[in-house]
Each structure stands twice: as structure tokens, then as C-alpha cells.
Length: 193
Image 1 (tube, helix red, strand yellow):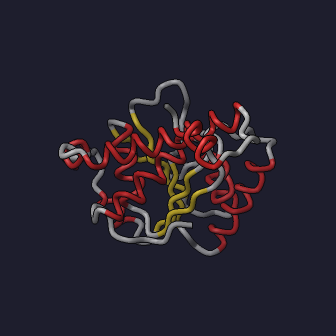
Image 2: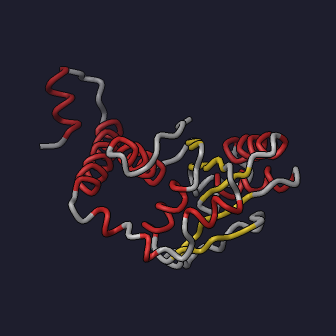
């Protein structure tokens, strides 16, 4: 019994097609995984800061105010989303805001390109676990972490503001983790845009 079938029968909506049902199930499964994962007693051990190469404090000492951008890694360079994100990066750099991202392709590349076009600082939090893609050439500094989880811990831990742009299940998972970590008091409350 899946969540989409529940909505279809509970609300008697005959307009739910297979694509809508798959999307609802994908979102529900992402949230279900994030909530179960965050409630595990071993969660704090998974994010053990001793596994991190770079401490949050070290990065914050160098860059006291950081806006972290999240979004699709698959946006092509000629897509409207990529081009709009470049403009966002340019505006952030004009306001002297240091921008952090996951440091790879799509939105991460676009925002870094916009920031460095206006001579700003674009830092990328990358990981040893991503080997098929190179970091963005527009990064002014790269902080390479060991795992995806330590990468996410650093990326979210250094942010004073979190900016979520269009994405897919990875972006939704990042938002879910962030929201629940704030709710559980594992991260300080920060604006999420």
C-alpha cells in the first residue's frame, strides 16, 4: 500500500495519474528515509566530527558569514535555471556575500560562476565519494570531505542562510535533513529560503 494510493482513495481524486503517483511516492519515501535516519540513536555517531577533514569552526573563522546554496546538479549550462542562478550568484557577490555550495555541476556550478564573475568568494564542499564528476572550475576555494555525510554536515553547519533552488530528490533530502536537524536542536536555527 503506497502513499499515492492512500491519497487517491482517501480524497477520491480521479485525476491522479501514474506520474503524479510516482512523484508523491518519491517525495514520501525521501521524507520517510530522512525522518527514520534522523531519529536513529546512532545519527550523531554518523556525523561524528572526528571524521571531518575541516571543522565548521575553521571554515567560519576564515569566512564568518556564509550563504549556502542547494539545487539541481543536472541543470545544463544553457537552461533557464542555470542562467538565472548565475545572475543570483552575481547579485550575491555584489552584496559581498560568501557563497558555499556542494561544489560540482548544475546549480552549484552556476552560482559559483556568477559569484566569481563579480570577484566574489565561491567555496565548494566536495567529497572523495563523488568520483565521476570534477569540482566546478569557478570555485575560489574547495574544502574536500571524506564522505557525503561529512560533506553535508559541513555544508549545512557553516551556513548563516540556506537558499534552496529548484532541484530533485537530492535537494529535497538536503532540505529534510536540515529541517529535522534544526528541529531536533542539532543545528542552530537559521533562515531557510
